[in-house]
Amino acid sequence: MTASSLLRNLHPIAVYFALSVLILSGCGSGQPVRVLPEGSTAIIASLGGPIQPSRSPIGFVPYLTAGIEHGITDDVTVHGNLHLLMAFFAVGGIDIGASGRLWRQNDALPEVTASARLIGFMKFGDPVSPRLYPDVSLNASWEVADRTLAYIGTHTTFQWKPGEVFISPFVGVQFPLSSRFSLQTELIWQAANHDTRVGLFEGLSSIGGMGSFGGFVAGVFTL
Image (tube, rainbow, N blue to C red; front, top):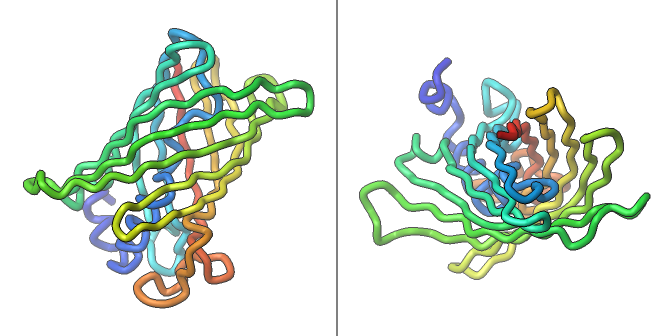
């Protein structure tokens, strides 16, 4: 099944729901769990979305991003992603930002990483209507085995008009499959502070009527 045919088969409410919530809750695993060493570069691709087995033939509404990360110092990494699924809806999507290490792991005390980025969308052929969403995140991570990280954190995403704040806690694991390639799996409660039981969202994949439960898988390849 091609991506375009898959999207056509998705329930339209589910698609709108997925795009709306994803835009306002961090849009997937496109940021490093920890910063990269100075001079290191990695390519990352992420696939996931709200889990909706009753509305999607694959069990979730897919959202795809791909991007790059680069360590400019041992404590700061810059990153950017293209939001590839949005192109099927004639919308260009991109995010750029940076992550910084606040402190290193010390025995049982986790390493803490803060990130800030700007998420932007613009409809093709309509350059006067871009939409920008600032997003900040904070995560704590533990190296539980060699190059294997368990982490927990939250995104906070801001919408200008109307003025809204969307909080999206997440938990995940990143583990190596080879010397250069790692896999990152993440569960996220998107827009957890917003009631999604009524209206267009219909409570799809919400937790207690709030937000949307989703999952992501990301591949990280170090160059």
